[in-house]
Length: 254
Ligand SMILES: [Zn+2]
Image 1: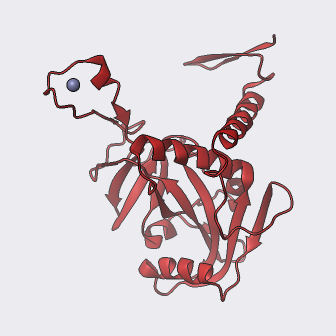
Image 2: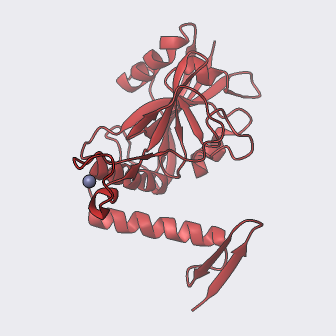
């Protein structure tokens, strides 16, 4: 059995028999998880109904300007950017990424015992090319800690993400509309840059505040996201991988 050792300053990982380096191992594990999940529940990973037949695992499609899909996105964009004009709308169909996202969504649905656990939210990538997101999904912002710590930030209002927009060389703007597993939401409208993950929701048992029974403590579960409020928009911050999917890339002018 092969083993690899990956060391960093603060932590150490040892992996046995998966792959030669940590990046290969991560990709191998992600593929195995996606395969296992689709075996267990073949329906929940089913892509959105508007997805078109595709060749290969990863493809993007231009959404027609006269479609309901286009109209829905445009309406959402213009709610807070009324002067915005949509130049093109691309639907991202990345099957491996979708499968990982769908697995996360399914876990949260089962934990919360409800289907409605996601929101469609805007996200600007600034200097990061949308192509990078198409291949690898949204990165947590480890480099510069945000107001609620290093997480992935998504906004209800397009006007908020417009401040974080990507600008193409031809001067047109781009931002994403993403499906995000907000799940069980911890509302913290006051910023806290020391946050590193969502807090744990303590299970409210009927035995009183001093209850320390294992069966009750075992019900504690971490919130899935934090809801913040800044620059006139409700925003959601996610701290774990595979909790968001870049459904659409919007190219627009204002
Ligand atoms: Zn109890």
